[in-house]
Length: 181
Ligand SMILES: *[C@@H]1O[C@H](CO)[C@@H](O)[C@H](O)[C@H]1NC(C)=O
Ligand SMILES: *[C@@H]1O[C@H](CO)[C@@H](O)[C@H](O)[C@H]1NC(C)=O
Image 1 (cartoon, rainbow, N blue to C red):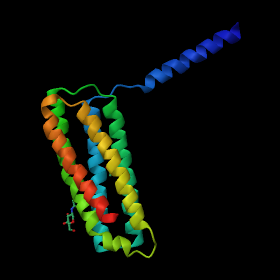
Image 2 (image 1 turned 180 degrees about the vertical axis):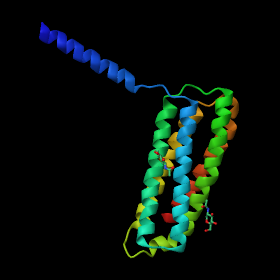
Image 3 (image 1 turned 60 degrees about the vertical axis):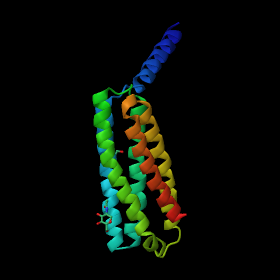
Image 4 (image 1 turned 135 degrees about the horizontal axis):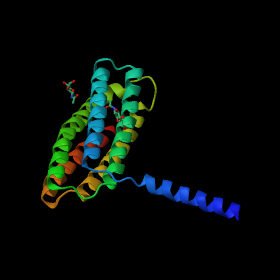
């Protein structure tokens, strides 16, 4: 019987720790996540600019490292969006403004990474261009998931603007992917 009781205790402990992992998130969490995405986009942009003037292998590989980190930040934000209930008008507006700032940064990064394509291809190791293409595809797919999940919790009257931002960002990804394909 003591054995049975401790099994019961264990399963109760297991159940409560599972419950703890479904932590609710909120608008401030998402805004913090967006600052992480913004920071990672700035880092990527800075490193693209460095690579543009000094196209070494080390600087080229930094583009890959930065893309992976940016992707992690985007996926982390998506996880929190999925745990957040529908946003209020004020929350939706605050997040939309923050996302509009991200839009400029990511479009700048995509334009500039396209501009350094010849330098990426000229590196003495093969396949950094293929790695950049693969990173762009991953980032594009995960960004679209983030956009769609954010749109799903946005108040109805903000949807037109949110969809416009998503369309513009998706088009910029498509252009960069086409350039590297
Ligand atoms: C990148 O995002 C992570 C979260 O995924 C964050 O911890 C980190 O501070 C961000 N990096 C920059 C340079 O902002
Ligand atoms: C894109 O590249 C141009 C020219 O190198 C640079 O002036 C600009 O700051 C870059 N954009 C971003 C967002 O880093």
